[in-house]
Amino acid sequence: MKRNGFFHIVIACFMLVGPGILPTAMARPSTNLPTAEATQVRASPGTTKPDTASEAALWRQRVQPIVAGCTTDYQKARAIYDWVCQNIAYDMADHISDANTCWNQKRGICSGYSQLYIKLAHGCGLQAEEINGMAKTITQTNGKGPHAWVKVRTEKGWTLLDATWGAGEVVTDRSGAKQFKRQFRSFWFDINPQWNIFTHFPKQPEDQLLPSPITQEQYHRLPILWPSVEAWGLEADQMLSHCLEHKDAKMPKTYDVPKPIVGKMKLIAFPLKRTLLPGKSYQLEVECTDENHRPFLQPNTEWEKKGNKYTATIRPTSKQKYVRLEIGEPDGNGGWKIYTLLEYTVKAK
Image 1 (cartoon, rainbow, N blue to C red):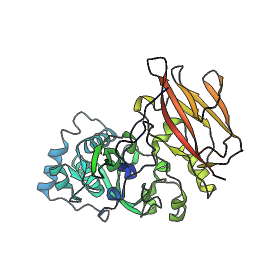
Image 2: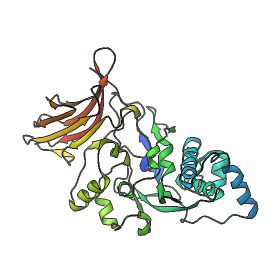
Image 3: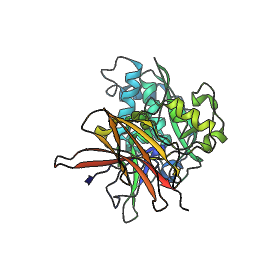
Image 4: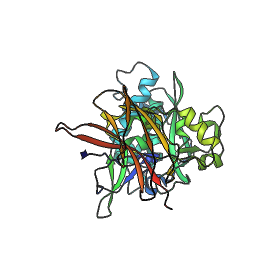
């Protein structure tokens, strides 16, 4: 059985941080969020300085080729997001935070990404504002790392986006050196506010864009979940309600997988826990979209199959350190390429 994996990027800023090439090919967890370098930035106060007439003309000129062919505000907002993510690198040295320098040098920190996005948005007539607050990262899971992101108004209303996390990640190679690795992520545009609040907490409650804003204490108790998990069948409103109702709610580690694999399996039922108890039984149910994909469990566990639905009972032992839910696809040689989706730890006695 052949195992393949995929590296993670940025978010929470998620400017994700990776340990370079992992010793195994298993996919890297999406909880590997950005490093402190990627989030401890000099965020601006949430306002954008008005342009002079000549500056406004310059930004109109700059954004014109980016939004060429767009017929709606939403299309323009997305085109600017794509351009910023694909052309601006995370600034590892000078902490560039102003839009013009970010444009000229094609690098910046999170406030540089957000200020550049806003200037380009204003240049094509869009209303956009910077949001300042805190974000959860791999090194700051308490969610106190300062961060900046954006809301832009389109015909759909206010739309949340994080171009920093959408651009790539900061990775660390075996020598310990850090560098920016570009890896575009579309799901940090038009973020469902109910997913966004798992990792982003704005200073102003109205910037949560939630019907009922949550408190900072509630935010700190939430586990880290990315909006990308929606592709596996998870509902944002249900997950947020569950986690708010259960103060000790912990989620299993979620993993990034290659884009063609995303959505090939739906999670119907699984333990909403991070740690499983030895000797206790847990039920799993998934549905695969076609016959070319199927679930696996590590340690190996038998599945009961009915159509495209699979059910299994897992009963960890005290000798196990983890339980992994995986998805496989044919490798072309009679075997399977395996990608990890969820990982539970098993409590030691």
